[in-house]
Length: 104
Image (cartoon, rainbow, N blue to C red):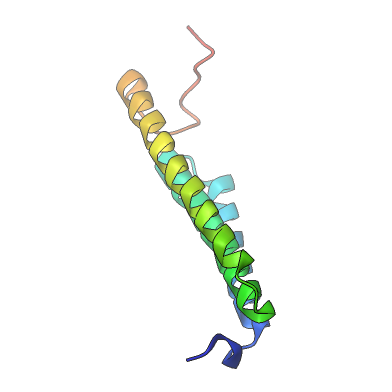
């Protein structure tokens, strides 16, 4: 199945739906792990858009940029999980509304 057989608008619609679901999860959820997963969903929506435009325009620059976004996502996941682990060890919770690091 070729990418050109499916219209570009379908890819953009799917990407926007995934991005909105991720953004809604970041705004509404209180669990830090779920927030990081929603950020990953948003990054994957951007990756889908980049690949769709790259294939539509016949240019490989978008596909190469996806590798950089994936590297940033991997680094974000590693640092984010380390922060969540440190937070859980010190406060015994991963809920962001229960954590206030400014209080003594």
